[in-house]
Image (cartoon, rainbow, N blue to C red; front, top):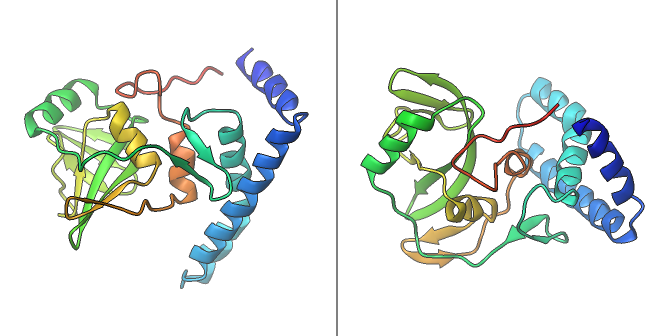
Length: 209
């Protein structure tokens, strides 16, 4: 029933001129952004695989955005979300540990704080493994339940909050403690943003099917 409803919803949306225009803008922006990034891919086999799957993921990301899967203000010309930026975030290790002791699960979308050369940014990742006293995120690797990294000293796993997930989706960054120009999200993070359980970001999104 959910799939049928979603199909009807998409059909209705594509009958709307504004939605079609936004979809077209997003597709163009995403293609330009991803192809620019792929120019630096040294492995011909990986490059071929990425290019083959690119149309599917570009259309999927644009569709999710037009369907309103992310409740943030959209800048369709630049293919990004915008929201007021707050001060550089911080969280208590004990609070992070308490949360992941109870709520760590595969498929949960989480915020990652990445610090490099005096710059701090919030990124989106997804837990894909849960082991004894640690979790593995798809891109950033293993963390203990207090959010401390086991593979990269630059990354920290944080407890999800509406403010942090918003900051991650908007590419918020800080240079030292001053607000810096937001970064543009890659296609992977744009897709992950639609997998966030926005009514309650501390819980995994349940997809009916």
